[in-house]
Length: 467
Image 1 (tube, rainbow, N blue to C red):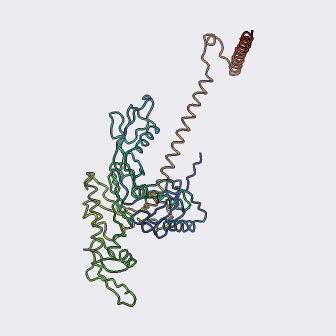
Image 2 (tube, rainbow, N blue to C red; image 1 turned 180 degrees about the vertical axis):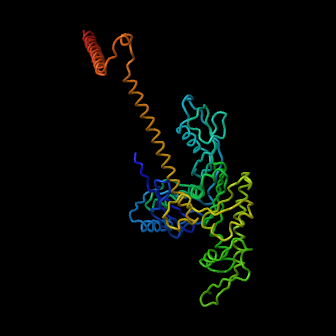
Image 3 (cartoon, rainbow, N blue to C red; image 1 turned 90 degrees about the vertical axis):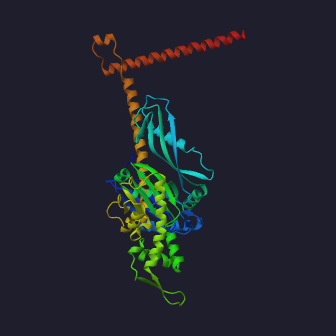
């Protein structure tokens, strides 16, 4: 089998930007970035494609920029992130009863468990995006994370099922396919971001990933290595920009620039006597904006988003004492000044910014370490996880086939000793082969004799019938 790592491409279709990143793992397991391109996103609102033509143009522009960074790239398949307020999740339980109870629990049993969950009854307008096992149960044993190799009659599991609107998913598929690409898999954006910014200790300690994007804020909660909850909050960075635009009476481009350069998530940290001067429209006099007022607008919307986070944590019984790893803020909106302090004040949990450099090899573009690219980097990691799982399954099947073949060969070559052999000299390999040849010839002769007799009898019966 070819052990060379493939090139995997992540495509993040966001409300404000579309990014395409191509990467490959090196011999140390780190991700080497081979191509990077981005474009301003048009046609997407709140994570949903509302204008397919504009989205296609933006995807193609991002791809062209990616090719420009590395002309040797050839991109055919992509892993695509999905978000939007249409995303929902539910918890289910599934069980199977195994026929061959003497055999070990295999990946085939787990696959059957997962595939059965795709038959879960959901609204007709929705579609299952992903089925994620949480904990397995084998007979009376519970809280099992890896049941393969165990013995048992009944195997069950608790599942986290992610669903989305069929039409919203179709629009993403059409936009990507009409851009000349094939979707390898759709991945929920907070799960991709989590893969990029989390380490093994975070999974065990318990963390909440808060991915603040342009159109939505995505939440994923992990505890003791298990995905406990996912949610999509229908507010993001663009809502803050619109609040500034409407509240201060400025253009949207000016509002975005002020948010990025002078915005504070905590109004108490903004200076009272600081002002921003922006040019007036069509000869009007310049306008002065209070930095304090700007901070109050930003804090009001960010507090609302964090209140949603607290609500979801309480819904699943994950109060701040259980989240030993705290809250990891990522996405473009996480770069607001003093957002960590506001998050800790609102949620009561410790907070930090999640950068997607946990798995990146050295020598990458500095821009890719920004939180806004966490989803795209995570999509590549998801692709590598699939690749490694497929390769592992192939290797296991290869070993099983070879083991079975060798066992049959050994059984065919082994000859049971007789009493005469025990008393006499052990025959050589040549003598064994000669004996087998004689046995085969005798068997063939016996078969031909029987066929000859049957043919003669058949003709005799026909002659008798004529008479």
